[in-house]
Image (cartoon, rainbow, N blue to C red; front, top):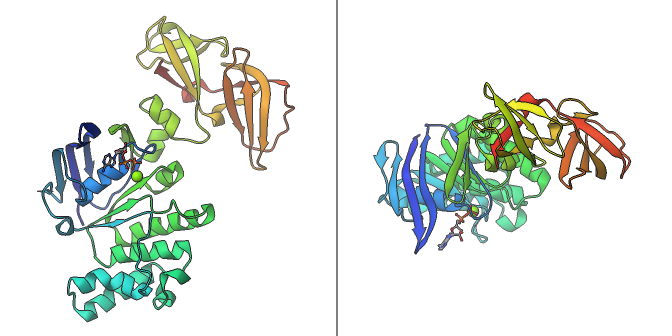
Length: 351
Ligand code: ADP
Ligand code: MG
C-alpha cells in the first residue's frame, strides 16, 4: 500500500491550462474522492497519477518516490474506467487473468488471485461466462476484479458507476465501500455524483476549473463550505443564495437584510458593514412560519415525495427559494407562506 503526494501539479494541453497547481497529501489506505462539475479536470488529474498523461509542472510522489517519469505499469496503480473495457470473447476468468498472463505470472498464482478477487466481488459462479451474458453491475465488478488481481497499492476509479441505473449504482457504491474495508488499499475515486462522494470518501477534494476549492471530510464540507462554489455544489437540492446587505457588524456578527429576508444576525465571515453578500441557506434549514430571519413568498411549485415535501417559493422581489419539509405536507399553489431558519446554520459569502 502507498500514500501519495501531489505538489503544485500542473497540466496544460497546448496553451490551455487544465490543472493549475494542485497540492494534495493522500494517506496510505485513505479513500479520497475528486468531485466537481464536468470538465473541471478530475479525469486529467487521475490520468496524471496513473501515468497516462504527462505532467506539465510540479511533482508526483507515490510511496515517497518521485514518479513524474515512471512508466504507468511501474507505479503499482490500477485504474477502473466508466466503460468497463472487457474483452467480449473472453470469459470472466480470462478477462481477470489476462494482464497477469501477459506478465508471465505463474499459473497457480493467477488461479489463487482470480479466485480471491471473485470471492471478494461475489463473481465465483460467473467465472465461465462471457461479458455479453452479464448485467451492467456484474461487468463493472469484473472490471474491478481485473484491477484487484494485479494487487495494486493504489486504486483509481474514474466515474465507475455512471453507466448503471440508480438502484444498481447504490448497490455498487456499497460494494466499493466494502471492498475498501476488506483490502484497505489507497483509493482515489472520481465522480460528479455528490452522494457517492459523501458516502464513500474519507476526504473529498472539490475541484473547479483545475483548482482545488476545498479538501475535507464530507460532513465538514457540508457544514463549513469554504466558499460559495462548494456551498452550491455539496448538498441536494442546491443551497439557496439570497442577495443581502450587511447592515451592521459588531463583534464578528453581521446583521443582514434584504427585501426577501427580515433582519437577522449571522457570523460575519470577515465581511464589513455596507458590503453586499450572499446569504446561503440549505433548503432543509427552512422551517414553517415566520420567526427569526423570516422569508415570505408565494408557493410556485410543490413536490410531495411522501417522506418529504419540496416547496418552491417566489419572493416579492422575484427570488426563488426552495424549502424541504421532512414530512408530507400540503401547500396550496399561489398561497402566501413564511419560513424562518436557525441563523447559526446559515452561511454568508462575499457577493
Ligand atoms: P472532467 O473529468 O472533470 O470532466 P477532464 O479532466 O476530462 O474533466 O477535462 C478537463 C479539461 O481538459 C476539459 O476542458 C477538456 O476539454 C480538456 N482536455 C482533456 N483532455 C484533453 C486533451 N487530450 N486535449 C485537449 N484538451 C483536453
Ligand atoms: Mg472525467
